[in-house]
Length: 280
Image (cartoon, rainbow, N blue to C red):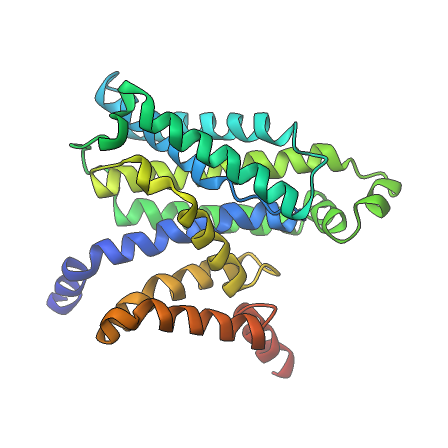
């Protein structure tokens, strides 16, 4: 028991970060499952993080209520973003959503109540490891149920052939909007948890590199199953720590490993479990 307590005390931040990154990976998995390459989730993170922190610090809201309120605001922003970009696909959709994320970040830099470029400090440490992983387990379960429901089958149909799906009676616009809203809610929730875990937020926490990290988590783990993004997030969050002995070459090794996964396991790491299950 002492060993477990000592291990957690030494690595609690890393453990929490794995759970938060897994939620972020799931947020982008939702839109990918519907055939939408959305890279604006860092904007949803920022909206929920700033909103929840300000509700706690300025309005004295309870922690959970503030986190949920911030996440709902992020979901509403997802709906507002999703509606005008429904007609866009592929790289055009990615560029439009990247622009949204940058707009949110620039607003965070220039608005006085967000602390400007200096951010907000002194955030109370309300996020717990139990809360993070309970939220992750609930999100995985709900998204797994979604993937096996009629809506999940509609997502898959839209991703494979939107015209054919529409011909079968599926409403692509409605399902795309739902995917945007769900992904935005999860990204916002993760952003709020992260804010109350790191005690400090600034606009640099929500830059373009964060969106690339989320996409890498999902792609490396595999988007064919809800467990894939969680696996990818765990691996790519742990890699920098495992490769610490390489010092300045850690990022290079991290990139090489990610490239090897994409080349030799195009369906992601989760496909290894599927192969094992089929051969059993």
